[in-house]
Length: 536
Image (cartoon, rainbow, N blue to C red; front, side, top):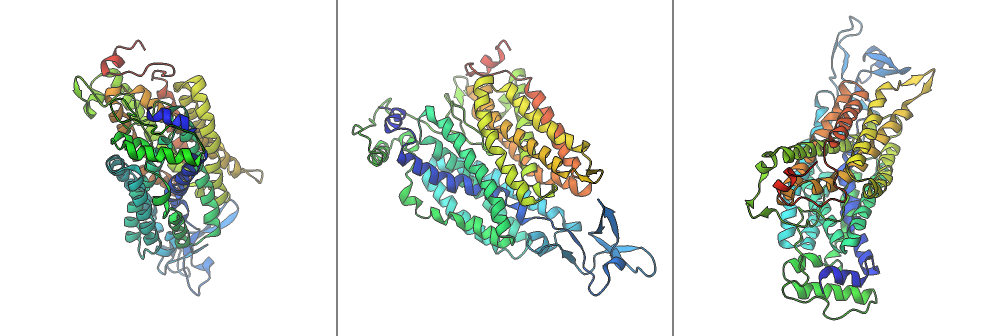
């Protein structure tokens, strides 16, 4: 029998598969949310002002009233208060409201304040590089080997990050851990979903998003319990020490083994699962030869069963069809040669770019919102759970185009409305309303991200599907790199500026999605000509 038939016979989500699935998701999804969003705490910016030893602050630092309280200047001090009000930059360093982040340790404030965002952007560049490298490696050397090595290396470099003695070594190590994050995250998603038959693969993909969202929520608790940035970095790096015995516990992907013609090894894994699940199955289950167990998995392809994209992390499995046709192998330029395909490509690039920009912009900077930063980031993770669940049901009932538009518009309007909310009215603090709108924006952007990945795979013709999704994914990575600097606008203006920017872009992305064709219930185009000749 073929592999998918064997998996059905074993029973999808049997005890064996469930245990392996949970282990993979804990180390590959749950913990990776920590690495992706840890800079929200590692690089937290406390209140600060110039250090003036032995001098009255009121006579040495300019101050002003903000929301009814006195706030001291962060970057200047009086040159000689007894003579005039002329100021100079801080001469003796800074005093901070708490001493526990890379900002306070290396004085990344005032003229150095952009270095925090730079470090996070460098991390995101590492993620981009890792997505290009580890997909190819796992296709060549196997899922398990690449995944395990990535986990071990991430622990080593993650611990090294916790002991970094200066900003530059910290940033270099963050780049490396960012690249390794994809070796852990991307490959774990593929391993988790390749375990199941097509009927259950989409469900498995949805469940991985819940591990990711739970990781965000738990990060808030860990950061609260471990306020020192080095301790937090150590914990999120060393937690995966539980993965050290995985080499002897978790099996290689049977799909990858079958694709390499290693039928006997795949058979051994299936028989082990059958014994563990107490299932009576024939032996052998797979038969070598033409047509037996054929499967050609590719990390850069996507399933035809509707996967969910995870929080700006594009994952995929297998697409029906190939990357070439009788006319020859297609390339990047083919995406822009014809009008319909060019429109699809440009819109998808824009939508993916906005999704990543807004998602990471909101996720990494919840600490600048009013209220408790730990509660805010916990809520930002919690809202993703209903977002993924709701979107997975909506797309099967109402298609892709309209839900994608609506989720973008809902998220965009929520962010944009924050500009209309005053800080307070008649002494009533309205900042919680701003936080609520920002979280509603996070809900909308998370839900739209869950749709756009599937939508892209259905829009692009088979002959350029890998290239099209790859270009869209690259655009998304660029959005993630820019996101930290987008929120930097808050420091030079107000919190409303980046939120309104996110809102406007999200609304535009939603409206441009209406220019695309609905794909629900339609046959995916195989060739470019098929797309160009379509009636709508």
